[in-house]
Amino acid sequence: MAIQQVSTQDSVQPTTTPEITVAGLGKRYGPSVVLNDINLSIAPGEIHGIVGENGAGKSTLLKILGGAIVADYGTLSLDGQPVKISSPRDSIARGISLIAQELALIPERSVLENVFLGRWSNTAGLARIGSDAEHFARLIDETGFELDPSAIVGRLPIGLAQQVEILKALARGAKVLCMDEPTAVLNEAEKARLLLVMKRLAAAGTTVILVSHYLNEVLELADRVTILRDGRHILTGVAQEQTPESLVRHMVGRDVDFLIPEIPEVGAEAPTALKVSGLSSSKVAEISLEVRRGEILGLAGLVGSGRSETLLAIFGADPATAGTVEINGRRIPGGSVARAIKAGIALVPESRKEQGLITVRPVSENIALATLAKRSLAGFVKWQQEKKAVAAISEAVDIRGVRQNMSIAGLSGGNQQKALFAKWLLDPPSVLLVDEPTRGVDIAAKTRIHKMIAELAAKGTAVVVVSSELEEVIGLSHRIKVMRHGRIVAEFDRNASRDEVMASAFLK
Image (cartoon, rainbow, N blue to C red; front, side, top):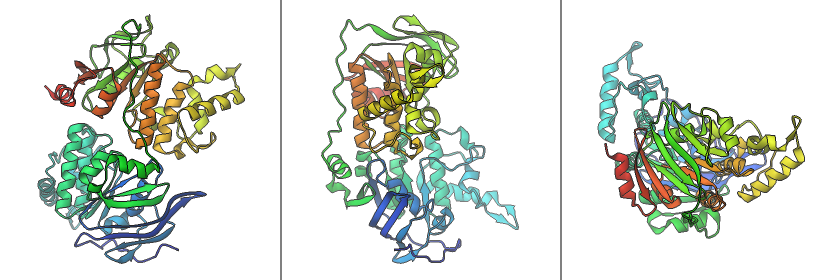
């Protein structure tokens, strides 16, 4: 079945929120079927959650609705009328806006300019700033956002930048917001604000289609929830009739124990693996901490509190201006990633695509790169040895259905994250620094990554974990240090409550 062709005019503007129906929708890339015969109806003004494992087809479905990609077959209808959406312009004209994980903003321009980007009010080509300012004020009143229209977008924290993206969609007359992992990079306070805005928009008649790995979040917000698995529509049902356990069962086709695993006890006699004394950089000040072999230390705090910057300074990626780092009692000269790796420090960074992987290279090279010298002789790589090592570690971390020679960019987020861990597990480090270990991965991959961290600690590796999910930090860690404004301000044991840790993060 070919996707039906109908004319789309940029002047088309929805007067009411449309019902969205997809029938027999499909998308493939070569032999890989990403979406297979999807049939789904989304009611006007509802919050509709879409969940599934990485690679289930969730983002692909949103991108089809948002015009970023075109379906190969099937029909898309609004209020019973088949429409063609072959570009974001078509989608916007029909009142549908896609808010992707990577925000489409111009960082050098102001909030007001970004909100009305390409649609500034004008008379005879002359901008009417006052008219846009009035429109902006109405949008602010409707959403409850607190944004300075003159602020430069590139200087805003990610939570506020995301609000700009939402305002931009509403300014274009969007009646349907397709939101792909909108809370993945937000702190707890920013998440709470965004969830409240979604509820407010839905109450006013806007349809919100929400893709998220945070199942409790989906169940709290959504009226109905759709489950995809391997590109197929498995179930659509009332959210209140589901639980996180039932969603996972349908997502993976089996029961999954997705509780954070038991972490190993650390004996009082365990020697110190990592000692940081008075470490300072341009972003952090006087960081001091110790982690014993087999211990997991959690770093909590708001986005921008200095957690990630602390890991980068320890790893030598951010130059230290003062302080020392010792591994197993030996001081490491600062400012060198190579020396840090040689001393036994590994870093799983916050952004796997920008900091952790070479996306144009194959899976095997990405996994083998950090320990290449151990399988080389006179400048030549021992390919057979590398192939066996990569295959063994890929199986150990449960990277499924992946060929070693395929581009790592083609892997799901969960498999990319597991590959990032595999890179360092080929030669297990003395100290593992992990920044946002499960960001953007599904529940099954999250469970496996948690187990990997616990297993590594059980074998004697000292682990430092940074996560914006407080439950993850508290559940995985023996101790938690809280950061604020680039400094460590509090410490708790693993019995600390979420409220105690949050209070320390927010106190001024």
